[in-house]
Image (cartoon, rainbow, N blue to C red):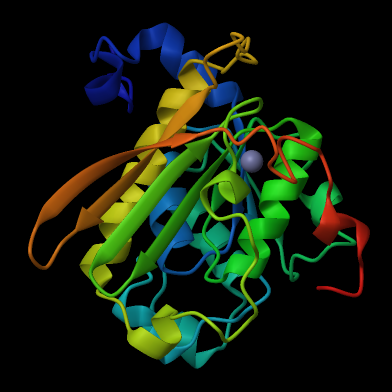
Length: 265
Ligand SMILES: [Zn+2]
């Protein structure tokens, strides 16, 4: 008898053979295939998630190799598109899954089309403007997504479910580009991005195995989610409860400022 390639996770009670079959049918969009997306897409491909939509406009550069798990010097020398290089490497890791590369930037005029039809969206972007746009699109489409941010030695991961708190409940305003620290200005460790992407991919598997239903909102109790923060240099793990803000522009009032203003992005 041939042993299943997924036997090590199928024997886990959290997954089982039935869970593995669900993963084979699951569809995930990954926005950004840099340090985060290259690790989380690899974990999902190895785990047997059946369909991955791989979205990135950039090409592989030498400075990416410090932290982007999937890529090689050959990719950087040839300036291969990240989405195409990721597709090729993921297919060589698991030829049984389907990958759909999208070489394009995500903006207000294409985001709904790019993210529609999937069960889950993973944030592998590196700026708040794209995350805020994903937040609006996911809310409008009713698709769960996982916000993931990294800076220096700090990782942040927050699952955002339809009906629950969103990114704008955590951070009500969208900061101006260039007004906040990023990995480009402040740096990042390859271990920071791996921890963040590993936690993101694990939460992704959990969500795909237990498709979230819209939470009913009790009168006195608002739904919450958890922001996980991991510091890798002086190791520390923190869980912060984030409450839904009923007056939130996006998940409370459904006012999609970025989606509706094509001049903003
Ligand atoms: Zn909100």
